[in-house]
Image (cartoon, rainbow, N blue to C red; front, side, top):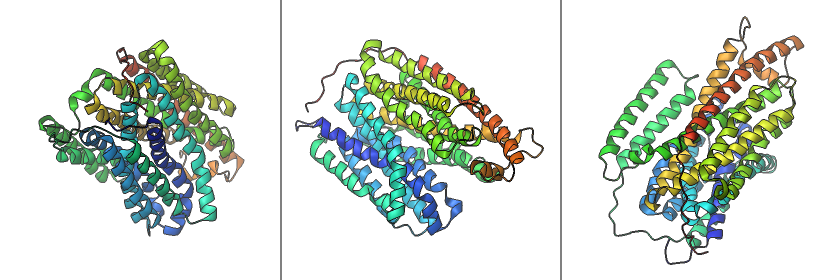
Length: 489
């Protein structure tokens, strides 16, 4: 940090504003999408409005982490906010679904800079002992967005044009940018010649983008298309590794990712991300389709996870010094299978309260695990690698969500296809069950039984992944956190 005074509380407020802008985007857009697609048409592109954003966000996360190590956090954060706001404004002017998808790709690039670099700034400004508490604040941003997003989206759709779900980002983004310009100051070595690994960045982006497209469309795209995309991933990933081995300043330092602590912590984060996406994707389906509860009850059961996460992250700050960071990390990982056992034991007559308890336990465990793994990784590297290390952890978690959606979706489809029913269960049967329009009680009961069996298999798969998460967390070695002085407020 520079000799100019950095105001930590105001910088933190700017980070929270920028992250809230990114976090609320998912929930608020999901609420408005039926109206958007009704006006723009192109229903076949519906899912790509969400996938496009995640695609570029995940692919660029590590790239921007490295750029923040080379050129400083402020420049990359301001660039990310600018790109995100440009994408937001353009989304509001979209005239078709393909144009909306292109503009969402731009938004995702901006988000790929905001989240990892914002968390890196927290690592720069706050000591490890303080950072757990701060991570609790940041986790609460995502919890609040999960509650506020659907409400705000509904109000905007009811009283204004859907374009405003994107345009409301502009004042938030400008406010965050002003905060960074005025209150975040850094010392950057301007004389040192820095080389940017453009080739590595391009190959990495192509590799991750092709992998995510292959994973997203594996069950729906033609076999030839999936094969070609997979081949593109293999080739680009191979070329990327070759490039990083010879680049003077590689975009991704392979030796950094190969360090035992970083590899184990990122592995645990990836698997925890997989387990959590299994919960968020399939718990509402179970509560509505099997337990025969309303969508509101299903939403409350899932909200317990959103509540548990910031509580766990905040508690981590209070117990790191007493119990040690490795023990807290292990405790968080152990809570993941405990919560998964609750879901694996659910039945048609179970109370939604039980599902909510399991959701709370997994969210609480994720709060402990995500906070401690990030603090660990940030603490063992110096300033010049902290952006890359932070981005690697966020990338692992995002990749875990993508892998989890694909893997658990495949398990569910396997269960539905081998349900014991003569013709299996069609997607139309499930749709009618979930919206309450089944043609007869007999059909309703038979489809519900098949869905219960298939979701049980899915929750068992979540339990297996959660158990493996504990194994990766156990590989993390114990370290002693140094007490480094914090910058002046």
